[in-house]
Length: 457
Ligand SMILES: *Cc1c(COP(=O)(O)O)cnc(C)c1O
Image (cartoon, rainbow, N blue to C red; front, side, top):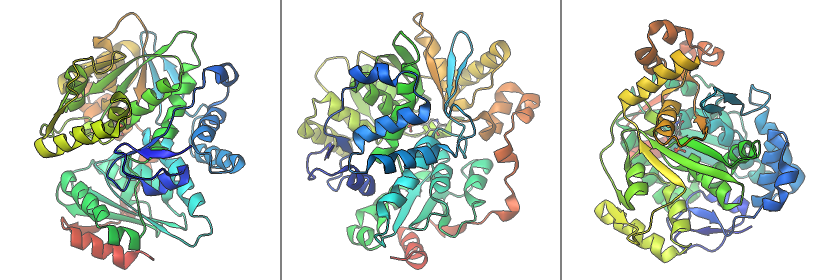
């Protein structure tokens, strides 16, 4: 399998090259040259345990790693999960929840990042090379990435976050990891400033090469690949095509569902759920992609205006024509607005729905009082959206995070009695006394100096 850039300006890469490269050098995203058609294998796949199914899917896309090694990486990653089914499906009658938060940091990000950390380490192997992973987080990605690479010899991680603007628990999930290869950088600035520092550091190609910088955000193809397994696993459980509701921010999770659809796995409709940051809901309704300002909501992991993974979808939607993708992306970069402009519905299989905070809290209350289940605010956005498009089928709603990660939002919606009762031992055992981080100004040079002094090139 070869990987191409959505912008057409990069020589094809192997899977392992694609994983180490992250963003393509021409600024595009890496995509597989084809989506293997699996219709004829589905009967053999039905009933496979989760881990075995994930191994089959990885083998289709990661064909430059010996199959046995790949299987071992995937199997080992899932030992970090505390549920025997990895991703259990909880049937609540009118809806069901696919719980993806049984990994070490309690969000769906663990499914991909537990695998990615091991993949990096395997690919670097005995080369003597080290990778310095650089990222910015507003919450869940940071802790999941740190837990994926902690203690791995060939990796260091430098994670920037806006000081005082993540939730207290999210910060502790990062800063209480005491392995020497983990560097939490509390930046005196906003998340956007953190992300800009990361982007402009990657853009310094000499620095990137000298310090072997690697990326863990969802532009990395391995993350999408890892997430394809749960859509396939659930899709094969039912004779009818399964509809999914996906709370969406950077478009990584729902793109994994779309990739599964491309492979010929029978799936039903997808509900693309956003919070008040509705740029994607508007795009799928109108074909016009227009940047707005970021609204801060109770579902912070979806407070995103520019969804980096959308470019992979655009490539598919534009007939895999890199010239059309390039035109769209440069128009968007120049003017903050771009349009498909072909008058056709963007995607007849996707129902876009934006959900505001009142509707999110009302859904949390309703699902708790009538169905006895506590949703985290992100998953609640998905459930609320699915209900708006309800068409007689029971959708599978993505359970994106454990509700105990968001005690303030749960208390606000369900009252302090429930808020106090929603706990998780992983969070209860976080010890603030062990927290450590380095405070830095919102200044690229300061971050680069820190990396220089704390990495082994
Ligand atoms: C990352 C995240 C999302 C958004 O997922 P994308 O892949 O960025 O669309 C939603 N909810 C939670 C809890 C998350 O951590």
